[in-house]
Amino acid sequence: MRIAIGGFQHETNTFSATPTTWQDFALADTWPALLQDEALLSEMTPNLPGAPRNIPIAGFIDAALRSRQNGPDQRSSPVLLPTVWCAAGPSGRVTRDAFERITGMLIDAIAAAQADAVYLDLHGAMAAEGFDDADGEILRRVRAVIGEETPLVASLDLHANVSPLMFDSADMLIAYCTYPHVDMAATGARAFDWLQQLPTGTARAAATHGAWRRVPYLIPMCWQCTDTAPAKDLYALQQRLESDGALSVSLAMGFPAADVEKCGPSVWAYADSQPAAELAAHALLEAFNAAEAAFSGEILNADAAVDRAIALVTSKGGPVVIADAQDNPGAGGSADTTALLKALVAGSARSAVLGLLVDPHAARRAHEAGEGSTLRLSLGGKSGIAGDTPFDAEFRVERLHAGEVVASGSVFSGYHLTLGPSACLAIGGVRVVVISKAVQLLDLALLRFIGIEPAEQAIIAVKSTVHFRADFAPLASEILICAAPGAFLLDPAALPWSKLPAEIRRRPAR
Image 1 (cartoon, rainbow, N blue to C red):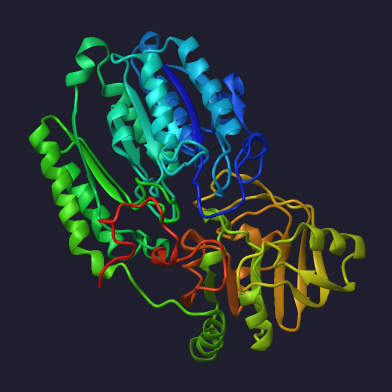
Image 2 (image 1 turned 135 degrees about the horizontal axis):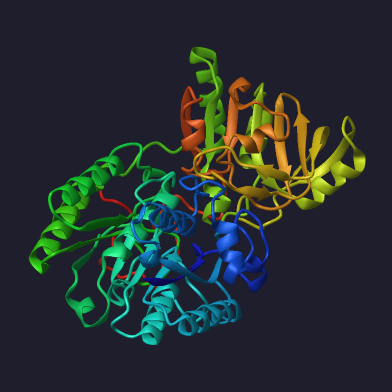
């Protein structure tokens, strides 16, 4: 089987005023720079089979390499035809120029490949200028160029906002099962395994039967973690449904910061018969509806979070982790708001660290001043977010770094991160890690690179919503959710919706 592979990933916060441009995909940051042809294979091929970078397409490639090694006949081994792959950090809508340019490159390469099958690494919550359902448009165009007899499989993020167009255009959609996303590469491998089993030609249309259902309410992302109930229980049901006979079952929690018609969770299933697919999808939808009231919890403001953290450190020790969840750059936040930092300083917190705060000007000034110096900065607070202002104070420059970091955790496994010029600044008993390019603090290496050992801190404030839990939860004595000012509002009902259907509840009913 000759398989064309490619991808175009973006999680779009349509409420963000910062557009996502061609340059955001073309240059490396958290993600590799845009890759084409053989560069895609060489960049995403693991050094050792079975140890891929935690990116879906890397898992797909690794599974293909393992099938070649384990297959009895090398002549029948899959041949991978690399096309185009790119990704950019969450932010506002993808510009029409970037969308058309990248999608055009992808379609042209797939058409030229004349492949037996196609695999795409998509997010599922991309919105572009002119295309609210950008992923659906990509899949539609790919189907148009490959015809009805060529299998098309796509992997999706757990936060995908899945549409009927997406579901109808692909033979199979397979979503991650974990948040924090520790199974991105594993999802790509699952996509390869299924693509190998799908027939081509005239038999393709009757190969599998599918059913898709939309969940009638939005879920705040801070309560979507699959390590705890109720999400944990829903994914356990998914596995049982697959064990009971469904070929593949997926559920997506949705990305609740996208003012598009398709926004929200959904479930879907594939089976050998249409009744079996309908039955599995219905069972999962019923479980989702029954769990609605459980998608909630305590959310604190900045001052209350700091007071609670200090009390917890006194009573049970640290580190206490505070999630600065509304300023998460992994969901379109600016990662430069200062309310939680100000609360830590005003509360006289000791042995506290906050990161990662994006302020390239402050980082550059710290590098010019040098380690051990003291300088006055107007730190952060430059995004214009309501209720946020810069923090004007004197800071001591404790440590400087160029910002090239090799990740060590499970979500960023295999990633080389580019933070730009970085600095550890201290004020009283609080340290703040300042970087130049936005990266979510979800890996212990993102503190250790600048000389901070996470386990030795009393309080750790992270600009992250859930992903930090994979690496920080094992260290934490307690985790608190904080709603300080930020571009990513935890309560979807507080957003100025215009396109979400009236029947979709803006928050779970209690």
